[in-house]
Image (cartoon, rainbow, N blue to C red; front, side, top):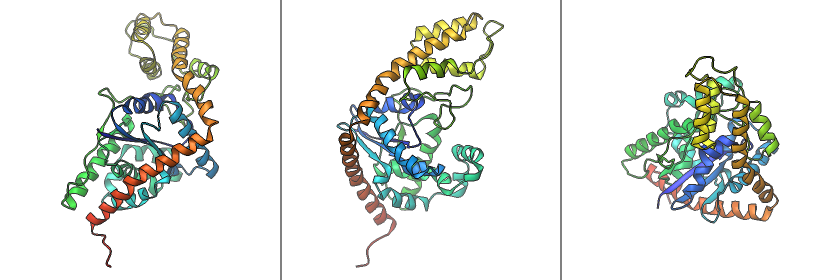
Length: 330
């Protein structure tokens, strides 16, 4: 049985992109795998969230994880900061991570461009903390989105470097896991980039039907094609990308043909897209309300998850220290 590990930063409500690109696969992976799913609240510190906001977001992501189908009876669900050993592992791995390679990561360059007033060390070493999360459990597979593929490759690089430096075969190289399909990246409704929590272009799992329909109908489009088989501008391509992820192939084919023949009515397309998104999100949003009111269930889930996660963490850090030469003198 393979060990699978992944997490989501606690930066607010989960959105459709999180669900289709990650959480839906998490649910499938619970069958036949040893799964660890965590809420990455240490990672969230790179954006300097307010204290109450951080606490509120951790709870919200936990509730939405569970409402989406993550089952604590089948998987280990935990909060990253409930496993303090991750900090020491992060420190140890940082000693063999180099400035040049960290500065070259796409995510660091993008974040530094977007938040030039807050280019902190945690942002720079984000891939190292991600590697610690993965290697703590000696994960075989990691369900990552397209934007995280480079970080996973860096984790493999850290594995090779650690094993070579200390002449051991201790860590194994984790692989991306998406049930054999392409890694999914869901674009936002504003015509560019991926769907995000901070960009204001997302549909959230907690949204009700009315909100979803309103957001989709306001999605950016153009005046429509003027020549048959015209290339799609990015905002239109984005809508079709979302539709391919939530609608039937027949629906996608119908609107693609309408576009190629210059007969498309974006209003009709948006109405269909909204209904297909509602069909996915409505059952989840209803479970969110139910689970959010069950404090005992939430408490039991995180306490049991932390206990199981720490068993691995304590063992991994102890063995790393021994390999690296940290031994008690007496």
